[in-house]
Image (cartoon, rainbow, N blue to C red; front, side, top):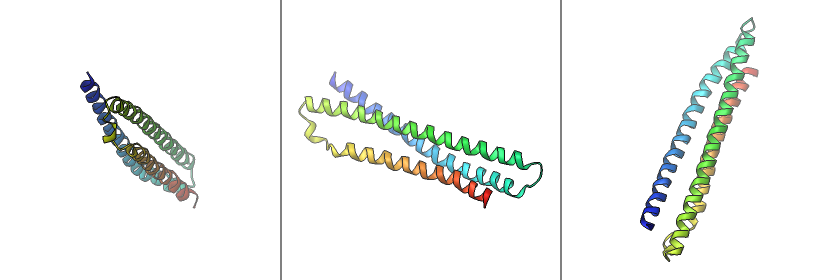
Length: 141
């Protein structure tokens, strides 16, 4: 039975890692695309002094809000993935301890996983900031 539990935990860790990778890649691609769209909307709003100014500004605000919301959701997904990984690894370590094989698993890996999530979250935050701030600078510069 322990073999099945161990295999299940490993499978869940694999699924969690794949989902986290997808979230990070999609967030990065989204932010780069949003940067282009937001910069274009900001440039249009900056040069239009006529009747389209309100519409251009509204489009810019909507895209900036959408960029912020998407990145908050991505960061939430990353936090959930981090929590899931921590719980799965804690269960696996408890199982290893109960079977006197825990000396073969370096517990510092848990810290490394946590740091990796911080790095991924930092990348998402930086790109989100760029995708939102650059268009604002374009619009008001």
